[in-house]
Image (cartoon, rainbow, N blue to C red; front, side, top):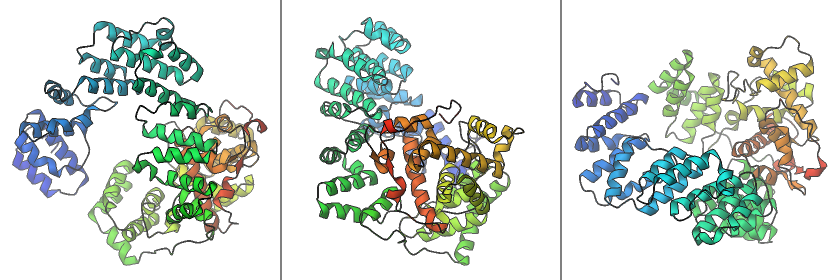
Length: 583
């Protein structure tokens, strides 16, 4: 039908969509039809079809605003503002909408400058030039300056090549300072102070907010004061997080409470900040409010939920009663047409397509139905889907499905050989590959333990595997042997400190060392203040995994806080440089 869309009548397309309603490809077809209708400006039919469209596509969203505007729906063009204020290029048809908005004066000069700033903040130079072109204040000189600045930001500062007479010129200068601040706070600050009198209060605050963000991610102590100087601009979600992490890193609890109070309500309600607010209140001896927050968090099944449980001194082995689905419940799920399609796609080795069908099959299910679905996936040895599905439950859980233990003999043997905690090994693998031995990352890491080719080659040389070749990485035994050897290596490098070793496994040993503090840090604080979001989330998930796996494997249990441990001060650790590691 997609191939014949241009020739098909509206009635034929409607019949097809009705016949195959609920199938994965139907909304894609509906979306392509909407694009065709929008391009042809068949607005009445577009608005008739649009309410059934479930996916998200900015091209179609732009057409929808145009369609409503055609029928004079009140304030319709204003709705296009949310599509305009994006840091990335929008589909080409959106420019037609933006032209209309500009002619109607819905898009103002301030809106142009706001998006110009957004585009530059994401280094989208071509987009920034296109936005500047829309302004009457723009000229050929500015466009040339944008290109020159992108080619050599440092020269723009030293040679004063940017005109600061227009708002666009000032934003371009702020962009250069932001680029400089990514590597040197002192240089950026020095350059700004020579001309700061030319900027208004909001622009000054914007500069200090960007300076503070980059400094905070390098754990510079001055970051807190620079965030305080950003009071006249709206800080992004990321900036507010790093404002809080700066105070957390210094364990300045009153300041942390102040920053969390500044957060938008939705952000302050995130588990991370509810937990650290409770910890800050506890440090201030405000136990009633602290315990109230800990109590609510302790019912949630994640890293901070487990830590909250421990703050309340709940039993380490306390687990909710697990739901076990009946055979009838599993069979009912298995009989669904969409599940049958997913299974057929798995047999054809079309895993991506199978996962899309699986997502459709498990959408809007109750906790009990999700657990039945996870049980079905586990029986098929689709461990990634089993874990993914079991993880989605809200109140009723099954931790055997969330934390499966396949390949137990191999894991026990490898953990014993390397002297590792088997729960930690399982914690790493659950996060790395969800137990799918064919897993391969975008950067080339492979197998159960997602070992990088260079790391595998280095380990193979260390253990004397003269016949090793890259194809062996997908062999279960080989992959586990290589991965656990590297785990042992990172653990030894950090005197058995699993939190740091986990960070090193993901981001490399030198980075894990770089993120240490000048004073000893609680393991949870070290984890929360890791600059890389991927590694930060990875460490928290792996350590929580290990905490849950320990009783599942019949091992000696310990609190998550104890497992996270204390991170020694930076200058007490020595890391051997290895150029071929995961960094």
